[in-house]
Image 1: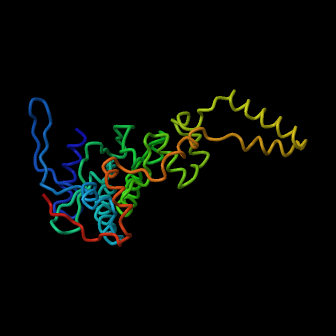
Image 2: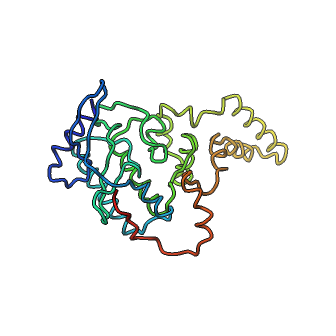
Image 3: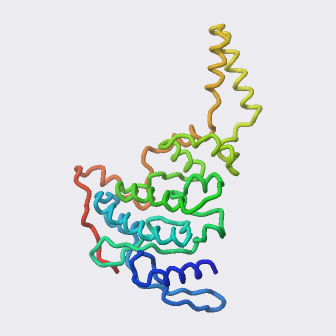
Length: 274
């Protein structure tokens, strides 16, 4: 099993416990089910944000968390391992009262040259190449980490799409359209960019051209107008979402947060590990 193989490699390579990866203690089979035991760790970063009422943490705290995760990714890079599911729920505290974390849950992980799955990464932290069906590599974990860093500081997901179409739209609202060649070579481009049929596109071009010629008689102007009316079908739909999308658990506290006076981010909330 790939997960077992990866966990064993990580345990052997991190004997001095410096790379912030969870350590497997043992494994056994029970009624044909694989059971794995791990070291006892604390709460994950999502639970920590929840305890902090999703107010976000100071940049100094976010920096400490990020450095710890980067230490893990450094080791994974050397071993050519892709985690494939980095998210706040898979980063946990492990030293009481300190900003020290470990990365857990290698159930979706794989070696870069031995990819197992195509449907990977939790949606909020899913990279564009995975969404569009491009070949992926270890860089997708860095994308996830960037999304996590922003969420730790603001308290809200950076790209909170309710589905993959909206997820890509959220990304493009911030970063713009992907390069043309990137879209054209995507195996899933029809899902996101080819929803308007050729007939619909032709009708729009003809209608807009006729109106422009009738109003101005300027053929060149009509051609320019024609080029402007062909739009990506899903962006308008996605742009109608609320300005701030929050996790369901955070919605209960949103009203209370708005009524509070603005205050500095809480840099010291680190509940005891249980």
